[in-house]
Length: 223
Image 1 (cartoon, helix red, strand yellow):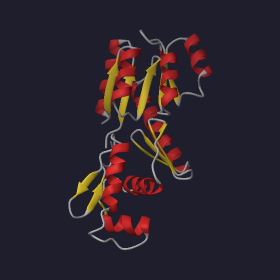
Image 2 (cartoon, rainbow, N blue to C red; image 1 turned 60 degrees about the vertical axis):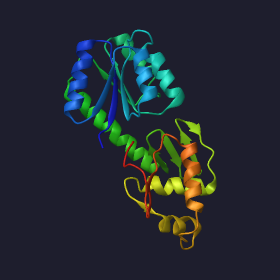
Image 3 (cartoon, rainbow, N blue to C red; image 1 turned 45 degrees about the vertical axis):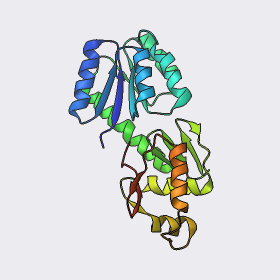
């Protein structure tokens, strides 16, 4: 599945160069020429990383960074051009994952992007958390967050969501769910799993749980 990247850069030529180069490296790219447009895209799309310029019209880069961090821990790479910008970015280093100074080679930027994405995956694996789009499952605390907001799931609903996401892209049979969660064999006349799935769909409308007729359920490998 292609990683989805948002580029927020007000210089049209620079934006185009970055966007085209990332697209050539098989990333799905969204671009914005001002802070407000970047925020709008962020709210509508599921993203894996943001490349953010510090000097932007409408909403400047640091203000936009703060907005992003209020609701998400998505990886962010900042672009800087001047020495004073560099100083500002360093002061915000706890909120960003990396920074690149202009002028820069597109190849170097892509290497930074790949490194940040790789590091983010490793951190998630080591943190006891599972990420699926904007959904975060904390395996230690047994909690679920959607866009950084807590989702009130029952224990059985939590277990079902965890089973489906940990096997994303694969069909999870009703028999497997009954065995793993309830600890006994599945009875075809028992609609308990279907009832839980119905409730999960209401609580997590952004997650498409596909019914595989006569077998079980599945979710896409990636959102």
